Amino acid sequence: MKAKLESLVASLQTATSLEHLQAATEQLCDILKVRHVVYHWVNSDGERFGAGTYSDAWVDRYLEKDYLRMDPVIFGCFQRFTPVIWKDLDWSSRAAAAMFRDALAHGLGNQGYTIPIRGPNGQFALFTVNDERDDDSWRAFVEAHARDLMIIAHEFNKKALEFERDGEGSPPPALSPRELTAMTCIAKGMSRAQASEEMGISEHTLRVYIESARHKLGALNTTHAVARALSEGIILV
Amino acid sequence: MKAKLESLVASLQTATSLEHLQAATEQLCDILKVRHVVYHWVNSDGERFGAGTYSDAWVDRYLEKDYLRMDPVIFGCFQRFTPVIWKDLDWSSRAAAAMFRDALAHGLGNQGYTIPIRGPNGQFALFTVNDERDDDSWRAFVEAHARDLMIIAHEFNKKALEFERDGEGSPPPALSPRELTAMTCIAKGMSRAQASEEMGISEHTLRVYIESARHKLGALNTTHAVARALSEGIILV
DNA sequence: CGGCTCCCCGCCAGAAATGGGGAGGCTATA
DNA sequence: TATAGCCTCCCCATTTCTGGCGGGGAGCCG
Image (cartoon, rainbow over all chains, first blue to last red; front, side, top):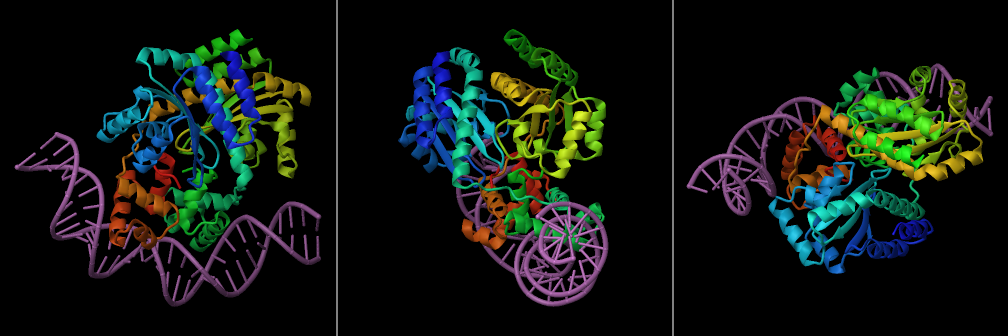
């Protein structure tokens, strides 16, 4: 199995299109002997893309029902760094439980393991393995393959980012130091008066920075600029 | 070496304090036979922490000179997902070149390899290996150890997040669906009028959502609320 | 040197956001 | 059943933001 995984990683590294990623998820299913392997991602523009072995019916259902908003896997992964075993999440809410039943009805296995991956510009991706198992057997599986899965997940993400960059190639705007501090102050909730006092400059000067930053970020207003700056990862709250 | 690395990972997993991380960086230096190993991170509050084998003199120098603002390694890693070999970065700017010379004078090797790691809440960390080598030998070293280093970097980060969480343990506030959509619209740069039209409700109702979200998020104003929501990962731009 | 970006300051007027107040219906959970 | 949370709507006055105008000095790069 190790050798097969190695060759899969190698083939991933030479992938040139999304179809290759799709094919890779299918091969992974065979190699790992699991029901489903899925990689999907949300980029900074909120666009979504997925490659995986879920049935079209389930994907449609998921979107139609807006499960994204209640999926404990999404929630859990969004707030943590480490991969999660689905059973460890909180499925107690009515909506989540209903979703889980729905998933089973659409051919998913009862066990899952999802690796969250974060890239620059707020990029966020999930790599999921799903199968029908009992709890102990699944934990053993996860323990045995955690590292390989992480490597593979990263290879997927590397490629996904590569493809995206080809399409757009959005160079992150460079803000001047003062602009950055100004934006940071605003993002921290200060009013312009407070921020200008904090920075020891006139309120008008501060305004100039904010406006400049807004233009550089292509933002429609200050709030938007802060949002973009945060998403691009050029400021921290 | 593999066995030594394994046992290091194991010891990392049982680490209970920052001192253990510090010790781990020193052990790694021995195992990999490199000059320096450093892990450092910036959390959502902008606080910094580092464990590593750089000399105090260099760390002080780095802070004093505010190299953080011009360091190509920081810049490069901030904008990409994949690890970088230092030599591949752009050191042509005057400031960067001066910094590099300064680094060599403070005992750093000429070669480096840095892995960027991103966690939730805008957490961002770097794991760096540094040594004195020629280019080819360094590339070979990196190729040979890339995966091990990634695993180790993740272990470091897992622990760092664990320690931090102990200190704070902030439960993310739950916004209602409408509040989330409202916040998302605002974060996208819409004015309240636009957002309310988008959602098909009166502008006042939208205001109520925003205010409610603001209170739940403990934010001082709308912009702050958006910033927090983004940082907490409960909305996407 | 000229051109560039960054840094800093002033005034004005209109547009937008904010912070209170109040009111009703609907659903779900306790 | 009752309480709580969510969703929806309206008015008020005040503060804040936005977009435009003008000015000057410092430093870097070709």
